[in-house]
Length: 243
Image (cartoon, rainbow, N blue to C red):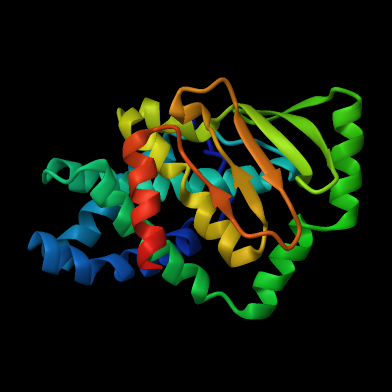
């Protein structure tokens, strides 16, 4: 008798791969021009890496883990691209610029009403009140391999904050032998904050070697994200000048 174990996936696999195909399509022209890498071959190799990474991932279960699992999927996408291009001699910074631009195009393709909805779900008075209350009680929560604590806001600096004490994205990058790419993956939040109006302010991450990631949110504020890793900060500044 053969016993089959069903693997838990927090998403529709076929739909996820279709979405990933669209992301890869944004990268293919640059990959062909800059690296002389045939787009079709690039797509096949990256899809294979993506499937392999997904098959070995640990997912958080429960409604509260949904957003964190989405972050993990995005990390798996970027790691797939990095692992393929790393074999062809591309640096973490070069690959990240490619991922950054593709993510920008993906977010720009989201209808404005949906982007407004994402913003409203994240930045609202209820969220602010709940997080600040949990901060006052010193509560820490675990969502899969993410562990967070809450930081009370108020005043002019920020409305509410979250410190990541453990990051599943960093764990996944390390597990995949790509620890050097982890500080770049953290910069995904620049595009997300810009696209969805999070007003994110962040100066350090676990991937930078710090003891926690300091996420601070301010309604209506511009995104201000920096890195303690010099090479990453240099690319952030270069992209700022271009954009």
